[in-house]
Image 1: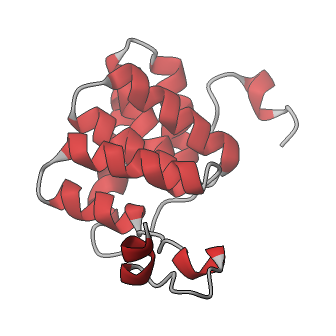
Image 2: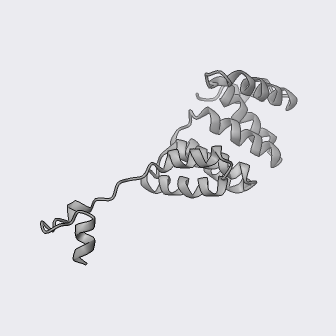
Image 3: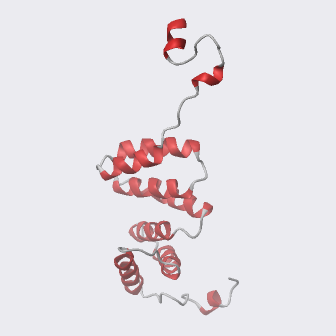
Length: 158
């Protein structure tokens, strides 16, 4: 045992604080694994990141994307919903959830999330293509991007 303590810095001072493990950046590791196309390994890293930060909405959103790419749609929906519980302003979560709900045969739920996405769209170089895609999907659903479907919904609380 003495050898291992010396090797890892325990030395004769014997303080247990001498052996503090360094925290890995699981989120960045997961993102790198996703870029390589290894979604299952990315999900493992996201789970580890979530263990350290259980209420981090962006980790949950990223997990939902990885679950979508691995065709685990129920898990993706669950993670998008949890992310939105924590941060209802996540445009990407509204966007991703909308298309999963559309695929699942829930056009009303999809329209609701598309409208929320379009009310506060993301900014950036690729944002316009996502905005156009969401607008077209909402149009295909026969819903107006601004007004709610029923007049009583428009007069409800904000």
